[in-house]
Image (tube, rainbow, N blue to C red; front, side, top):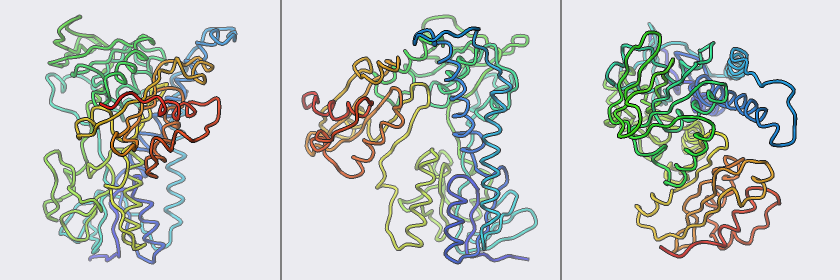
Length: 459
């Protein structure tokens, strides 16, 4: 027997429940399907638990630096790792429970537990149920990529989700992958007391950032005792008794590093391989992401893809913005587009990196003639007062239009300070206009108009 709905939403991540709620409020009968925990990556294995861990790690770090601020700590700072893990799990559980109550209270929304697969372009099977609708929205997320590296099947590899299940702190954590997820775990576990080595195949950390930003991030991590091994051309894994040997083939340094645990953080892959997309005729790109247009529509009429599975953004905020775009276009008569949004994200090491728009390298590659404004945190009063002077601020401005093309704020509160730039970029404000803003002192943000008044020559 087939159950008909006005809309089917597959996946209860960041976009799914919000979209189900809007559709139900509009009078539609909606099926929301989820095979795992409500909340998706963000609530269960991403933002919520990891930022809770970052907060615990920062408390330990600041306590160890108490003497720098004239504060005496009477005993050594100790980290109760099981308690740290219990805290992040409790925070995630509370978020899930809140979602359960919210979804359970929605009129005209039916939550169905199970694995969804297409039967046809308008039919989904979940166990022995068949659901049908002319509107199907996919919000199935992504998971850690585990490439077929030599020896990887012979050792216990951690991913971003498996590491959250640890109850004992690793003595030596080897992080394979020098990008956003890997670096956040590297710093937090170093602050928890683990020895940490980061192994990166490329010539520098987070290669998509401008070199001076990457270098500053490496300096922050190395000053805390994290070992960084770059240009690891042939990464391999091997058992060494109870430990794990990670082979590197680097041009310099030891040819391998031996740790008690290995975290693989080399990218994400979409959860699109077991949806039966071929039976619906929905196309994917070579990496497995569902192909969508700027309104998040797939090639099959009535089928949409939102969030990490569409390759148009890999963040909670991009997934939520996907929901806003789809809901506005379907229900509000709008014509919103993914192409209208300014890319923005943060790296949650401490101090954090806030990024918006284009990097300098991306702007030049796109053909812009640019002017650059920059200032190290050693010349930012707020950073000096807080004793956190590592990092820098950088702004990229288009010479022809005087528009702000991009920015990076690496320093205390950088993830918050960058929002002023995001707002101004979204409003189309020019650098000259921004220079007339009167900011509050002492803040990081007060230096942005100053930097824009000290732009380098056109290049």
